Amino acid sequence: MSRNLIARIAVAVVAVPIILWICYEGGYWLFGMVSLLALLGMAEFLINEGYRAKNLFFWFGLVIVALILASRSGISTQWFLWLQILFGGVSGVLVFFLISGMFLATGTRPPPELFKQHSRLVWGVAYIGLLYPYVYQLGTGYNEIPGVSVTGGDWLLFLFGLLWVGDTAAMGIGSWLGRHKLAPAVSPNKTVEGFVGGIIGAIVIGIVMYFWKFNDLAIYHILILSVGCSIFGQLGDLVESMWKRSLGIKDSSAIIPGHGGVLDRFDSLLFAAPFMFYYKLLIIVSASS
Image 1: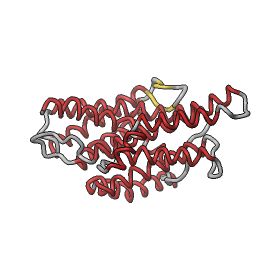
Image 2: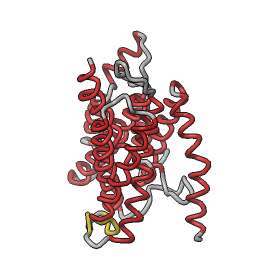
Image 3: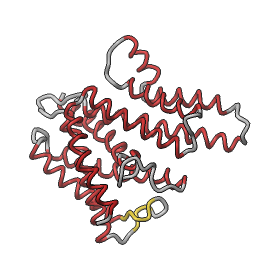
Image 4: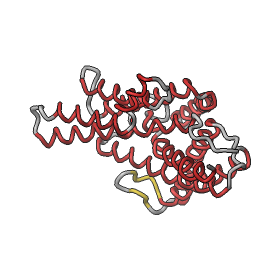
């Protein structure tokens, strides 16, 4: 057994129970965990893009992401109402787009470089600032379903289980049966067979979760969520890989032993969480109201 595999297993044994405990505690614990992951992920993005602590954009990017997260914290005061108006989701990205664009437009570098710099910065803020809040909102029990005794922690357990088991199934089946490349330009090791294996693994977890936690819902909702989260998660993984390939790097950092960086470990989460959130809100909650 390689040292890298031992490190991966050791980190998982320690981290998984802590993450799930925080998911069920919710509140400030969950908000703190999501904020920490988002800010670490933003720091990884900025450092790989060439920004350091002495650079204005390093801190501007972190502050904007922090403000976007704070605006989605659910605190209802007059001050936070203004925070939500100015930095709530897309508004925060728009603020960053406007200010960073005006600042860079006065730069001395060639316009193609300035435009590329601006585009990549806005992409990073949108990627992390818009998607991470859905993890928190999903875990807060936002828009609970009438007559269904499922907590925010249950939803996050469902989501993490789908992604973790699906990822393992995709790797295993891809290594065993993989013949057809899924996205050779972005991730040469991923195969169509592995992609299907990931969906099958997610379906298995979905069935387990249905009989364990979600039997108040129709099973077809659980199956759709399982398949949808697996597809969004696996393709979301490719989005992060596309960014890394554009820079010629393998991992976003080495902060998590055996796993790489925060963006490496939680890339699929960022795309699967919005799918689960909006399916729950627009389909399940709407049908139950």
